[in-house]
Image 1: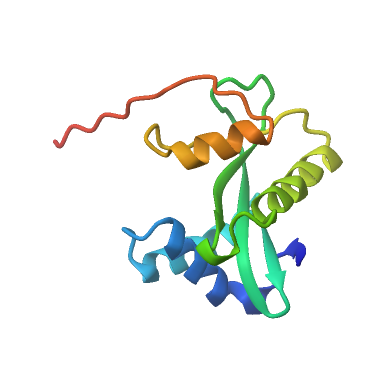
Image 2: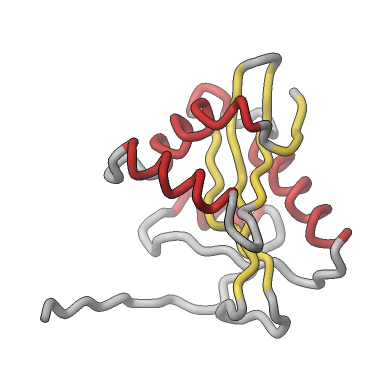
Length: 145
């Protein structure tokens, strides 16, 4: 397995993996949103884990001006982190996180933010196992106007 930055010709495979993480979002929307984020300033940073030509997972990083529990600004933030079910429990997720952490350190950042839904026990457990500390639970509201 190799962890490396996403190559432009791998965007369709990355988008397919994004659909594995966000299956309620239309594939075309994930594609459009992902491509736009790659071209933004600053761009979305994407690392992939690959076994040959097959993508096993990805991690996406953005720079946010603020992140709950973090002191710095901008704050590198994990926007998406996913490993295919058949590739889990093989160190793929932690290898992706190590690549993200190295990218952050290389740019002088001292912290990394992330989130998970409160009911996503697996993500919360994996984050804790990799050294993240929960800093806050958040309830999100919506009011139609």
